Image (tube, rainbow, N blue to C red; front, side, top):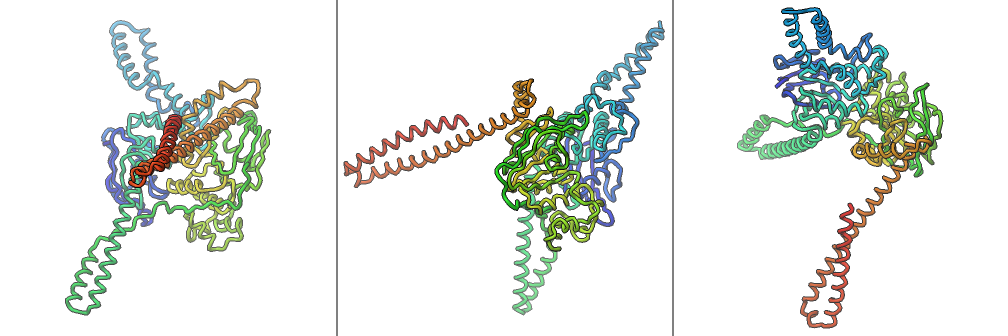
Length: 639
């Protein structure tokens, strides 16, 4: 065991956040802490690393073990370049390397006993240098930087010029290079693109120490975690398995607890009715029996009602009117910022009812495409055509659609003046803004709170084409699941950018990968994209004519998408033909059985003409069945 937490409790302003939290982490174990926003996850991590003190309880790190912690936001202040900053982690190895070089120079000038002693010392130091992976530390640093999404051309950028997200990645890289016995990470995927998240997953899965993570990235948790530590209503419950295992077990426990609660409530009502009845008899013996039952009832350990599943947001998205079949047509879209070309000659068609996810590395221009569609940026070239009766609802991750000087109430009432006070309050309450919260100014809200306000406005917009930029950012897992359910039930059209793979898997029917300044299309969810990605990219790169950029990757991608769509249509036809075949076989087998039964009845057995008719029908049915059996075998073999 590397870490033990025993009966940890913490309260702020006499409001308990954590109560009696106990769990342990074994050597080499990969564990995750989950819970809704405000459940105390980050507070628990700060108590473990000593940044906050517990009101009660003990945190114990095994003797001789080391621990590294990555907080959500890092403010790395340094005059170093990116590469130099990560090299500071290897200061001991660099010092050993310099000492070895100095000893090599000294050996050239030494002889006799002094040379022998120097060579022995050199051998010992060189052995330590090898054990510390000294001969590979530079490639290790470069590998971590590339894995976290930094290009070699960026290695010499100064830290002071980086964004907050890039600085967090630097801090993560330094932590990984330190190789502590226990790595503690608070939302490590927040500032990573999909490729970097995949790299981090592989790194942590192969990590020789223990890992403790707080994350809302369910796909990440499914791949990494072997234990889930849930914080709910200040209490802690430990589940074995990954996030999907936890979700199943959690619902089973909730149902069992609800059943026990309802059964106890039924028993309480029954006892109260009996007590009332006994008292109504107004006899001494009956009254004593009633009092005895009352004492037993008062001693009963009354169960708390389990929290209802997913009550954070009640989200309903209903289009005001139906659009035409063609929702969006983009042709030849091109955009550059100075010498930096984001994309060129992009084509895109979106039909009514499609749920399309745009993915790609950070900086490839995904958000830029959404902004161009919404008229917030101008394209360098290309055309955008919206279909008939298309009404856009836009969710901007930077929340430009919000007015910072307004209160929450004003933001909703000014945009939708036909709503009365009760309707506005009910809408905001659905997004966890109650009481005096509705009079908070937008500029005083956190990023997550602004996201919830933007979603509230979107819910009221009755748009039939939703364009969402990272809609799950700052949402906890329960809120993500509610949003997913709402979008899956949405009858309009959906186009969004996201790096949340679990969210994409649940909501996307098509994926567009922005890579190499082009869009590659995949008809399916994220798992299908992973399965087909390498195959399709190789095909497109090998087939694309070099002489015509317009007929390159983008048009090939469109053709590939059409081929996939045709293939899926053929597959659906085969499945339908198989079902029809099975239904016909079942009908004919029933008819065959009925004929056989009819032929055995006494009145038919003595009627030669009727027997001949039934025999002829039987032969026809049998012949037809033989044909259908062969057809079924062929159809089943093709699926």
